[in-house]
Length: 259
Image: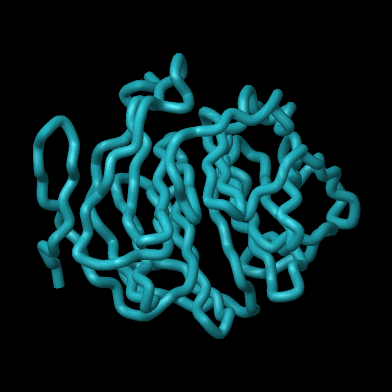
């Protein structure tokens, strides 16, 4: 059922209602990228969105991600897996959160909030010898896209990583970005969204190659409280505090700025 809930885009003085669909089921985390959506439930079961319904994949994970680097996940013991022909293959290393949104490289954080990434496509390395690069600093959530990487720390401070490339995922240093978020996600097209501690959803505007950090945050006003957001292919995917899932049409992206 298509619902026009109280979801408005506040931008340039205009208020536009977004059409949203309530998706059956409940999830604790999801990720959208490369035209695909994956998620995990409270019992760590894994699902992907196929033919307008959730299809379960064998295995158990606490966090899953999909992007140019493929489909990856971590389990309750922080072991890392990559999906290969719908089978999970364990790889070396341990992370609590992982992101495949970089240009064929992965990144993430471990239980101590240490930050890691892998330059180049991880599939080119042996499964037992992934060459992780340790980045200075501490973050609880780290996500990458075509114009750089974003993260938040335990104090909900937001940071941007300068000059990240597929062959040099370590970049050149952190820049503090104004605002406060509990999580941040970067779409395949470079769009950046986040959720704050009050459950409000925000988008970063003004992102372009000459200004990869953008200019400001705008709030997407929602008649609910959310804990997770992801964006891909013209749709916002949202998880409420109670695990309910919404899929909202959001055709605006940063692609015009990238062309």
